Image (cartoon, rainbow, N blue to C red; front, side):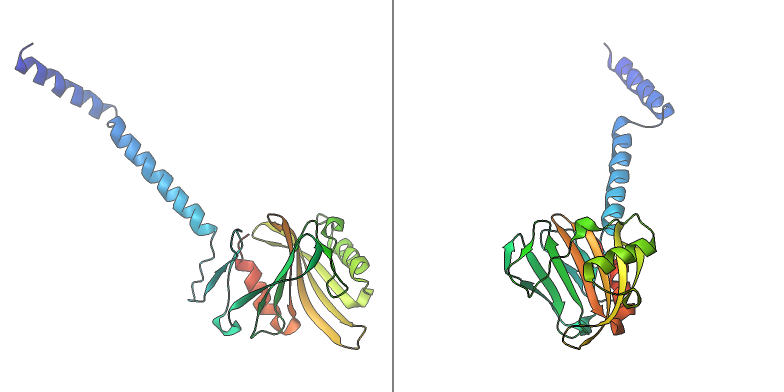
Length: 210
């Protein structure tokens, strides 16, 4: 075949490809860009932004991430001795009692210093009054010592409770607790702080990623 004939065929093919909207390579590049942008968007929305420059904490080997105030001090993990399963806490030195308690599904306390919360007994699809009754039974509190409402953290159902009572030692308790069953793989979480930190705790869980 003559060179001029080959050139003519190539030119004809180019015109046909242009008419059909571009080469397969071009389409492939566009698809790659779309996938990359989507992946970046998904990743960005699964991670707290911490726009005010506050530090971000990630619990190793879990999806748990949150922003916190630098004034709270560094988060400190503490293991608690257990008869079975696992239990550990995450605390901040410079806060008014802020603590996160991580309880494995098979946890059994080794002594009376730690209490296992029965997350399996919670029915989070119930109304607020029923949620209150459920907590009252577990915590052995009276009607006027607890308020509870439905909540969620990063799409995971939770209960927000306000506890006000006097403990067996005569100490007045006034705390905000979030109860989060199945928060991360193998663990449920209780997030607790004195009521003076109510706004800060609500903001903490609002941006938390699980």
